[in-house]
Length: 330
Image 1 (cartoon, rainbow, N blue to C red):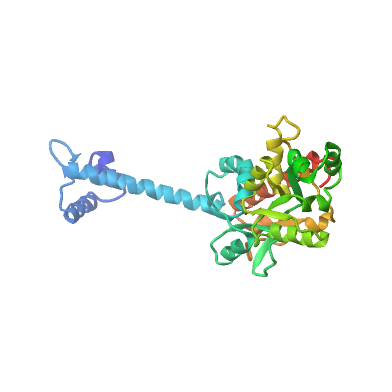
Image 2: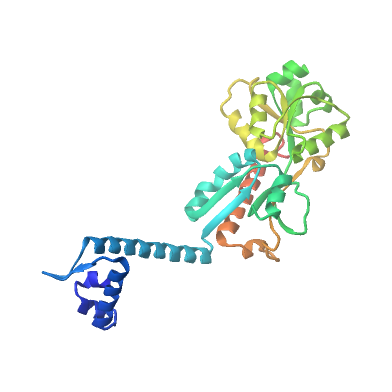
């Protein structure tokens, strides 16, 4: 490369602080190794076609080497890497887009892979090293894992006004009263409902509520896709149980509806709200978090920032729902 740049063996040797003999011997060894001539000497020193091919290859190697060096520097500074995130698909569809653009702008060299499943299965993947971060919903405590609390989700009964009128025989005054207070358990028992699959954390909490309220609603559908529940509610087919983290989707839908009967109602349940809370944690492999006031300080910057943005988004959803609900409380 230096010979090509200088156009002379003598100048190349001087620039590389080598003897001309050493440079000439190096070129001769390359020619013998590949069985080709790399330079023509007359009328002036120039690369042969084979020499140009080798020069291009060496340039590519040099560029690759620079890329690797840059990558190493980015890794050491915590601005590049991979995040394998385990999270429910419905939650990821609302949470991640809210902050990903800002995150990507700050960390353009971080690759994010999202794996969707229920908390139990995701926990197993985390234990086996297949995940870096898990969005845990009432995740069972495991001494081999680290937990960072993000927020607490309340659970609401969601149904359209038209559905409540037709299936529960409710009047506008009834619905307005339930919206300000809570929906009676007897009303829920009179209407078809959709729920998450049996193994989901949300379904287990709602089933406990049924037992405590001594009701057995008509179960019309089970699905782990929370967006499907919203669509079924919007088509006046069922009532559904949704957590705080999904209610912003209901709020967005409400902005596009002008008919009062078409609107979805978000109703509190008639029980101690503390019993209907879902604890939302960021769960990581054991030893990931530091002690003290800044547990994220032990993580590389790209991971700690991702978790911080995720937590801020979760908490902003909680504040949004609190403001949107009548009475301003969850």
